[in-house]
Length: 256
Image (cartoon, rainbow, N blue to C red; front, side, top):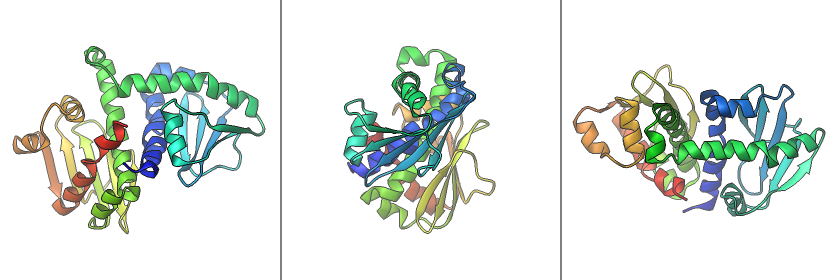
């Protein structure tokens, strides 16, 4: 497993999932109800750089370090950042204007927020018996997996090999009648957009939230579901074949 790829997944797929959590979960939204934005940047040496903005019940993750941040969290390497996400290491905080409030937030509410996210992403069978938890968990997982596909296609050596064979266009991965993500391919570089494309080049759609959840949990076989018409695939099948090869590597990283 490549540490740089894992760092990009942890930044954009896992931390980035806080965007969706705050939209879907009222309890998470209440944790970031502050009117004045708290802007916190991550600076990972040799790896991802991104900025989190928390305000009015929402979180936004921007690629790169925004100039007007209150606090910068510096990390010496991708491997160390992965340990930070796993709770086994600490970043070095560098405060700016408003940095004390931002640091207090990171030590308290941010920790509660990531704990809330983990509850949904690692939901137990008992948790999933609650339809509200199951729905939020599955929607979060679709976004996490969609974003992870792009990071693996862009940074993982095996994933990059498959990405070389994907033509330009938009791949839709979706749940029927509900939500979807776009894997946008340009010059073999993948970017995930957390909504369905207007004109997809290829589509992979699950017939229900329940089926998607079962697939994410490894309880059903994807090929069997395709044969039974529970997963619809259309458009440029070559694009889907290579995206699926990248998708096969997602569990390796998400289990880390």
